[in-house]
Image 1 (cartoon, rainbow, N blue to C red):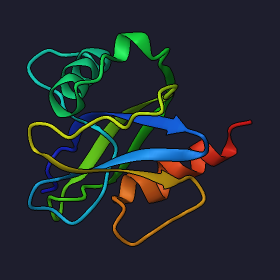
Image 2 (cartoon, rainbow, N blue to C red):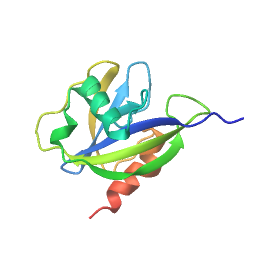
Image 3 (cartoon, helix red, strand yellow):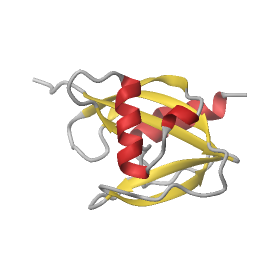
Image 4 (tube, rainbow, N blue to C red):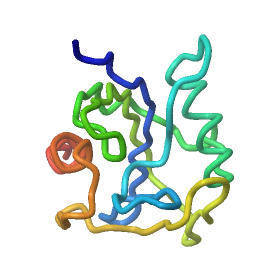
Length: 134
């Protein structure tokens, strides 16, 4: 029997044609900032909590827009899938958010670049959705 998907919320934060990606401590894949739902949280509440914990970013000031809801293989849990509510926003600052909590690395990656160290959700859904936007 297949396990139910892991429900997550993620933020596609874009600056000058590049996407902010994060890597958790002890893992090899870069992914969107965000994380797993807790309790009765909705997607925006989850995203608000996770971005504050991981990067010290207040999503209320970002002008979030829904990008989509996507299912993909989980990056760090073999045999599991994620069901992700993804939002997008523009990052207007020249500063890069700094890693906190379990985040070890933060990078800006060009939207046209696809490397093997990206989570499946990014490669299969998020990057194509961002590239398709005007």
